[in-house]
Image (cartoon, rainbow, N blue to C red; front, top):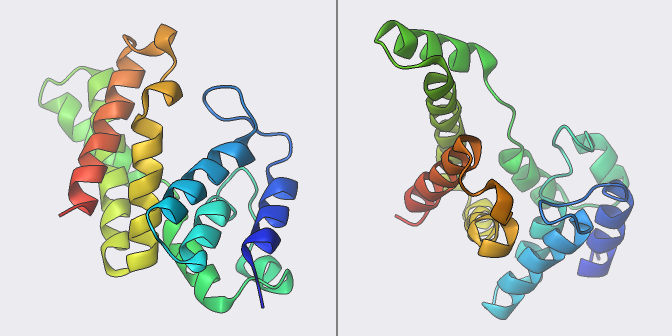
Length: 174
């Protein structure tokens, strides 16, 4: 049987050199999300998904086959696949060009396009209750004051990121 400790071991190895926005070990950020879900009474499966949620992203690029070979259950791998966000660059480019043609400044158009792309990704999670729970807790954690460096709070990039996360959280909590 695949356990929380198995997932933690995999996540620790995969994210060994990564840090979160506060500069701490990335795996600690994932553990915080899993711990919050546990405190909310969520199942071990939900906690496992929280620990492994970024395994199929660009930073680690673990494949479904690799995760299965490590003993991760198929149902968890399917949820991780739903959680993997791969930007749709052609959508972003087309959308931002359209907005710039409407007179929106290039930087604002690009941020808006990335937010729209992200919300399209979030909509995929609506049908997967485990992915939805994990993403809601992840967004709440990312919006926590300690994950928004004080020296970056007034930057346009940070304001747009916060706006994107808040819009995603609103969509998921409907």
